[in-house]
Structure formats: C-alpha cells, structure tokens
Length: 276
Image 1 (cartoon, helix red, strand yellow):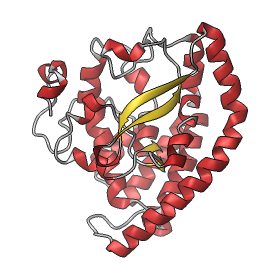
Image 2 (cartoon, helix red, strand yellow):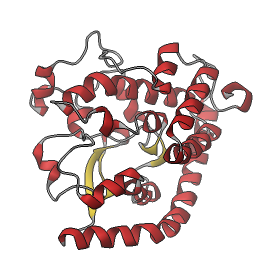
Image 3 (tube, helix red, strand yellow):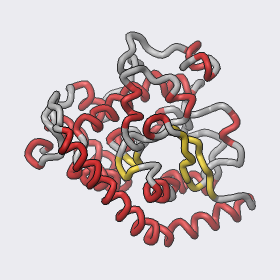
Image 4 (cartoon, one colour):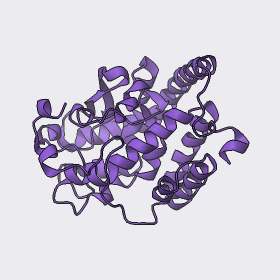
C-alpha cells in the first residue's frame, strides 16, 4: 500500500534535501489553504458548541493550552474548553475517560473531536500543521530522550498516526491510579515511535491518507486501525509497531525511544527542573 502509492519512503532511506524542502513548502501551502477554508466551514459547528460551553458555566468557551512546538518554541494551542475552569492547575497532564474535570458538554466535544477543530487557527498562523506529531506540554517534553527530541524538529499537527492509534487514550487511562505514570509507561513510548516514523517517511500523499483515516476513525475505529496497520506494514515498519497500531493486544510497559528502561514513578513525580 505505502510503496505502491508513494505514501512513504523506503525504510532507512535518506531523502535528498531538495525533496525535503519541496515537501515542506507544499505542506505549508496545503496547511494555509485548508485551514482557511476549514475555519469557515467549521464555524457552523464551532459557534453552537462554544455557545453551549458558555451557557454551561458562563465562562470562556476557549482554552489556550500551553504547548511546545517546533524547535522547542512555546505557543498557545486553541481548543474548545472541555474541562472545568483551571483544570490545568491540578498538575495532571494525562486525561482519563472518567476524569471528573471533564464537563457534560466537554464529553460530547471530546467524543467527536470538536475541541481539535479550533486548532485550525494555529495551523493558519504557522504554530501547527494539519498532520504532524501532536504537541505536548512542557512537563512531558522535558522528559524526552535525545531520540524523542526529534519530535520537536517539525511543526506539531492536529492529527498523525498516533492520534488515530491512541484516540481512545481516555479509555486506556480510565482505571489508572496515576494517569501520568501509566501514560509515560504504556502510551508515550509508542506515540513517540510512531511520530518518529512519520518524520522519517513524511510525504504529501501520506498526509492526505492520515487526514482521511482520521475521519474514518470517528465513524469506525476498527476500520481505521486496520488500515493504519496495513499502511505501516507496507512501509516496512517493525512488526511490534504494526501490532500496536492494530490495538488487538494489551499495551505493556516499555522504555521510550532512546531509553534503556521503563519510566519510573520517581521520574514522574520529579519537579520540572529535575527532569530536563
């Protein structure tokens, strides 16, 4: 699938600098055009959703989430607010499906990924791209290994391979006693590997395929997972990465890329300055 339709480069191949520059330029042109049109179309959904959020508690329907972007630059990611006001001050970065901070309207907003639509503004102004590794909070990027820091070499995206594979993140963490710890042990290693795989194999056809697969995942998650796994397999991705993409097996703790051991509870509890 991947080699036949040109979604990705051959495993281990190094793309010429000219082709990389062309891809980056085309990617930005597509981002600007699609986000401008998308914002106009999304207004039909965003405006009513914002009104419902405001009517729920009389507070701003938007949340400007601090995130780390390309080259470590900080920016504010625009989201529809799906949690109670000041939820980010609790120190919990990972959200489970049963998180009491999520509001009634917020559960609907999250279910249909409406909170992500507002990020088209970030794409338009250049903070983000339509497709790329999801942006993370500073506390999490500070824990990145040297290998994982490659995730900061490109603009973060609204969606990517990991966004589809782990679209059920809330369900994964719903029975967790420590959501941050379980995220770093069960999810982060695979999300990082999938993000690095995307960076190594990025192309316009792959971006378009992932946008389509993101839409399919909202309608039929099993279908989307099957197609993602097939895409990875045809691109020569390692077997364990393809198995995780299918999500047919329980997730098991493993080290992040570039690390030789699984993240410990002490590392998660450490102050931000101590984990740089």
